[in-house]
Length: 485
Ligand code: NDP
Image (cartoon, rainbow, N blue to C red; front, side, top):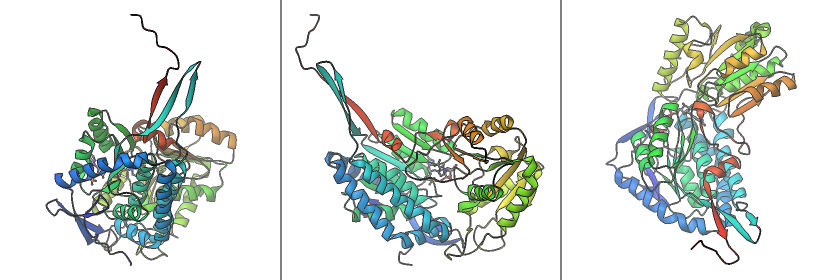
């Protein structure tokens, strides 16, 4: 591989690598072997201060450039990222354990899409002119200032770009804190941005656990926080940001429903269920983990699903032939195992999988439970692993009510050939992103985000611009000004 897994230093600040070994040691473990492949140090208060000070110092000049100039840098970064796709994908696979077969087509590529999309949009960001008779108001779309991005471990490159690209397009600076589990990839994003001509200080990466994230969120000089993470962390970040009345975007967890009607194309529905449960070993926030299957086709669905799961190639994730990799960490594997034990104890029927593989690394095969009831824990709580719960239904209104009976609302899907029903169901779903006869697509052109406990705000698309900029109204009086005294 071209990139060594051990980075030059832990942090990337003001256009260069920075180290402070006084910070807590974070060991990076390759999920496929359990071996340590790199180590970094958590940011100390001095490192955090450097990141904040350099971001603040660089932001005003960046914001003063034209949108075309900012966009050019982002589009150049997109090209560099695509050119480095192989090496970045290898690194993403070391960082997360996701198979190269996935990382080579999803991670740096979708990061590049975000850089290209927001790079293209930057020049079109404008205010408006509001005539008021002789007087008028004009609005200016202005950046927020210094933004903080905090990432989860499942898509470290993509998350850094989904947050960094719109922030930079709008004229902000960003400090990104990756998950301590996957600290490597965001550093490469920062390097590429520098190579593309991004002025120093505008995209800083600092490592650390929750405490570093908390320190960043609580700093009065930070204007906005965008978190991708779990609901409990989201609540903490939201509360801390509220103290400073900061702007917040929260991309949190889910327990999304996938409804398969008896008129659905069965092979497509099975594909949707596989994509919505087993891609990235099930570690995807928008996964459709409650699969409601119409009673009339349940047996056929389960038969085709289990037959197709035999085709999953588990193994060395760096081998392009491997289609199913390990889970990200021993801890995440244990969490999933705990849910599997609970599913069995509650009387769900284990159809396949269910036990970790007897080999090095954190491998849990695709696991399917049938005869799951709505009140079972495995149907209510996010597992974040390759565990699918299949539930039966017969009636459209009933299944929609059951699908919505959750605190979450990230995504939802429906498979049916009846398009009137499909749109009726999509309209009825309480979810931020809905799918008809597909699942888990996330193009940068479409807004992505949750309702209810799954989050606030939207990433991607023009909608993200609203969350990284603010509108200033300027009132202009053309004539004399009267006053009562
Ligand atoms: P966590 O909530 O554990 O962590 C998310 C990030 O927040 C990490 O970088 C973490 O640091 C940091 N953090 C933890 N505590 C605090 C705090 N008090 N203040 C500031 N930052 C903090 O999530 P996971 O990393 O385990 O990721 C899995 C979760 O992410 C799942 O629930 C999943 O659904 C969700 N997710 C949502 C997505 C979406 O777009 N909606 C996409 C991907 C995942 P550290 O872990 O280093 O301690």
